[in-house]
Amino acid sequence: MIDLHWFLPTSGDSRSLLGAGQGVAHDDVGLAQTVASGFRPPTIDYLADVARTAERLGFTGVLTPTGTWCEDAWLVTAALVRETSTLRFLVAFRPGVINPVLAAQMAAAYQRLSGGRLMLNVVTGGEPREQARFGDTDSKQERYRRTGEFLDVVRGTWTQAPFDYEGRHFTAQGAMVAGGIDPVPDIYFGGSSEPAGAVAARGADVYLTWGEPPEQVAEKIAWMRGLAAAEGRRLRFGLRVHTLSRDTHEEAWRHAQWLLDGLDPRVVAGAQEALRASESTGQQRMLALRERADATTYTDARQLEVHPGLWSGVGLVRGGAGTSLVGSHEEVADLIEQYHRIGIEEFILSGYPHIEEAYWFAEGVMPVLRRRGLLGEGRPADRHAQPLGA
Image 1 (cartoon, helix red, strand yellow):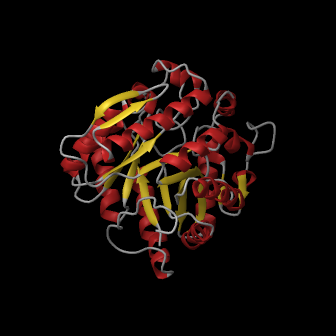
Image 2 (spheres, rainbow, N blue to C red):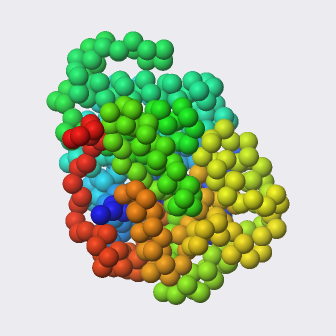
């Protein structure tokens, strides 16, 4: 069985791949551009519409991103708790800008207020300028060391109170959470570098990867399973990818072509230059999916198909998850099943715009997955990482 999650566009939404909420942001681009350019601004009413849509259609939760160009994930999702009943919120945040004991307390309060609907996406970060905006100028290696300590303190505060800790980046004396925490939220974590793998193996419940071709994802899963086994743990695995499904194969690819046709080659060139400066190994893997040197001259959407049904066009202008599942509902279900066979249990999906694409997927792909026995009904049971043999 698989779990399906959707996405909360807290930096704005639109029908295209550009705008403040999409694209690679620049210093003069932000929420103001979303409004001025006619895109959908991330008002609480609009985000509530997205959240309620995701809940109504049967998605388990929504990923809420973090960064300069996003509204704060903690605040937005806390406001949306009263707008929903069962939807879970996967809150992304950077461990370098918040004290881990405070984060543990915030999570405990969130669980009490929401009835246990919090999931945590810990994002170490790989963009130097973005990190520096928040006062984080540590090296990549040091950022992952800090993330590992952060997770040690958070888990210790939750489960070993009063908890003492002495590390290079964090210290704590008698850390605790008043009233405890129930349930302990799952921690989602991604990263393709060696230091990221070590942190995930020791401290994550769900390891996330972006939408690379299945054979590459299979290699990454095998790598992480080995690292987790060395720590005496098991991980679950999730895929972060976009989706574009339609009633027919031809209709889906026509829309992919429409998205591509809407991109200015100069904008693509600027975005690619910015993305090449990233320190993120995962981002470099996304870029490497397109082997052509000149990424500004694509005219046919099928030129950007890096695996049958896996389209890398989103990554021309967007950092992070840069691929989309494209095809008929049956074809998209086929690819999801292929990923599931190699070990993916959770899918975090999105599409532009987020309400309309949620309906395309829920009404087209979900019934196929249910017929194949891959998707159940209702809220899935809590499944935390377990010791080997458990």
